[in-house]
Image (cartoon, rainbow, N blue to C red; front, side, top):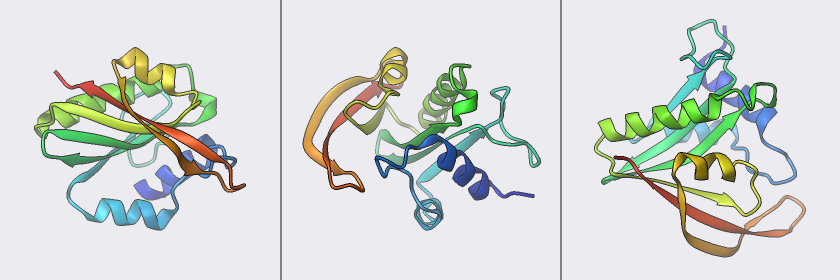
Length: 152
């Protein structure tokens, strides 16, 4: 039986392109979850929360702060994309964050990330930019864009 971190790592391995070096390693995920302010959700292929024996096809990992919650990672297995799993994860994030007192969601992503349309359709809007913030494993520099979305 896989534990939740195993399932997060399996989705991340399938979803993140190694060209950009965006996937976290197991230790990073474990360390984030040791603190009480990081939260996650796993969804199965039907877009429902994963039961103990279900295979996960999507997840999010977020960090709660004072009246804000930051989306650290969101991933959907390529085989399950375009089926509403990403939007369902964002719906869960919004509700979960609101229950923790968040008024705003934040995220940061590399310019050109194909998930940008998902985020914009959900109501995220750009609030800042960091020029050449990310460095790929090959050494290329990529801009980061910060987005926000009101929780209400």
